[in-house]
Image (cartoon, rainbow, N blue to C red; front, side):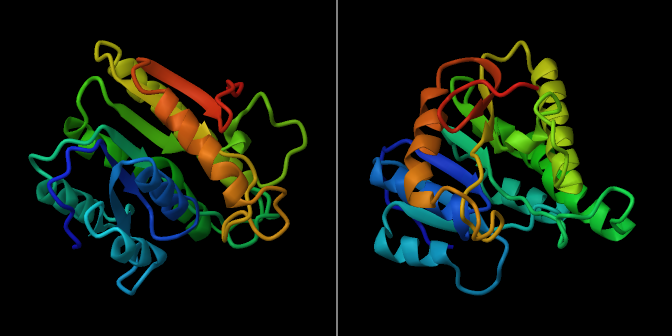
Length: 237
């Protein structure tokens, strides 16, 4: 682990920050004066390691595979006593052939996507929620494709279903936490050119990351769950 300094800057814990949107969010937060603790699943060097070397006083790296409950528990223990202004779960995946219908996909791949995208984020939140004060924020990277009301063209069925399930589980979590005045966020970033989004996506990370972080930070201090796009607009459930 790369340790941060004794800065009193606000701190964000980003789950899934090795590359793509997670790493870009980490860089943007550092740019705005935040300290970042980011998790990586890989045991090899990642893009987050480069960021940590550039900003050794402001970036820490932790190891976590979100699909492994014992690793979530170990991370909880390692972070015991810490406080984070924001916990944001970015880790996610898609099935190999995104054109597969629910009738096509193998049971193994379906389970992998659902466990990664729907079950694991809530396991992480349940395990780490005590590290976020009641005036802090807990957020998850969702998708506009998780909107049931917005599904008028179909496609990407497995991924869509996993994000819809994630949204439902966050609604349930919010209902159970209704007495806690904590801000909760499901963030739909849009179709962005990343390893997951692919080369044909209309937007670059350079265009979108500032808006994503703006929306994340603007949700602080606003209790309750919202499902928002990167511009802060409400996404229909």
